[in-house]
Length: 173
Image (cartoon, rainbow, N blue to C red; front, top):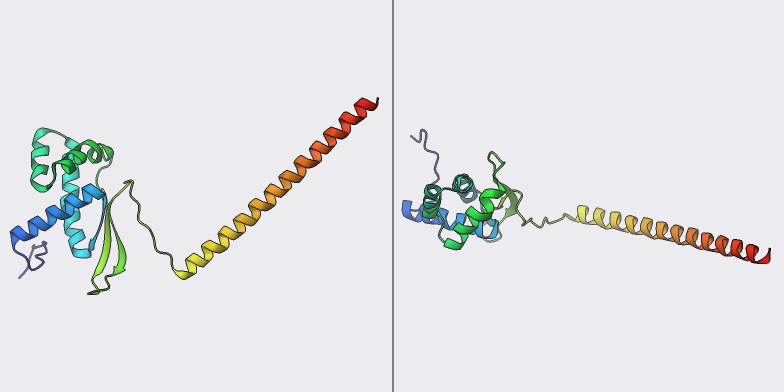
């Protein structure tokens, strides 16, 4: 029985599985957003959140522990210099998993695993209905902007004409 066994094995050996997590986490910290399958994202998220917690501590021991899991020294430096301080006030929940639909080849459920409050933001695919609604809204806003501009231009023209008329009256007097 599988009592209290929470890890997914992915039909891989332990060393292969650990290397896969290391690669996923390194890519996540490097690009701040990766696309993968749901089970891999859920397992990589646990590793990534733990490493960010180590980066928040920032001491030498934490850096050495994190160096075991991060493949590239440049990414390790980024983790401790940028990512750790970014989440200094946050008590957890540094990553987000957003589902993006099935993969075309094998119909596997794909997700985007990204750092919360990161600079990279996902491009959301609009449905036809949302795209149409956005176009209608944009057209209405454009019409309102043109109407407002026209009213302002007309008011400015009237004010200018009134000013010229007042100046002419002063010259005549």
